[in-house]
Length: 402
Image (tube, rainbow, N blue to C red; front, side, top):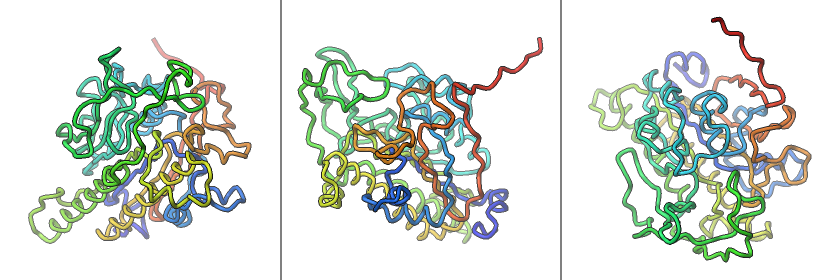
């Protein structure tokens, strides 16, 4: 079946691969082609995203939630988060809550269709018991971190465990087989440095004290570029694509496959850490914008967006090298929207479009939380997305028979 000329037939035959790339805290207009829609020159250099937008399908009426866990629960379970109990905020590392096991996931569905399923990046759907973890939620493999926020180079969490003088910061970096040993990780847990939060603070986490009372001793943001999370997650995703299709080619040729079951298509969920705070990027990406963006936070953020663009370029190249581009649907989405305090522009800064909110309630249906369009390859079938009701337009309760 030719996935490019007859994508619906290819889907029904189970032959198309699916790659879903979720970008964290990416502003709705923080891409070159989106800036141009505002009628101004693009400051952000995103040539590959621009090309995907030009060649693919742009889902302009595409809604996400304003914070991490609700969006991820809705994406993976195909249920509005109020039905899974995850509507009230993000899941903290200590919380005894997760996406309930009663709800199947998109990866379960792909597994049932015979897909090989893999996840790379950020989970953030609860960790307090084994059945919450991604390798028990339909993924054959996992590589990344399980909680919500950590340093891009050292993988050290942003929220400490313990209390008082015993409070410590630990790295969060592992696979489905256990924690990873890496030269990128600090040798011992570190004491949490008290640092001021950006204007407004993170969603659902009020500052413990005014910024002037909390001196910042955060380590320097520049680390080993080889340890940068976007680079590491991209490399793992490229490896999965390459190994999977090497295995399929060997199986087609009659040779034993050691990398992928014969004939199985691929589902890859790549949940990038970028462009979530802390605002960190290798220096060469920041330097791209040294002459065009004066504000350093915005400049580093723009560099992070450029690493995302580079990631997409590398994924596309890997699909091409595997002769899998015409049999793969690639979808790119933001999980929330831009965060002004950390360099993001949720709505193009000067427009009347809605800003990112930190509450799930009281939003007009004419003002969605974020509308970063998804981008897919030309071979993708057109999808119809349901409109999610706001609190002001809640569905009427169903009658039940007793």
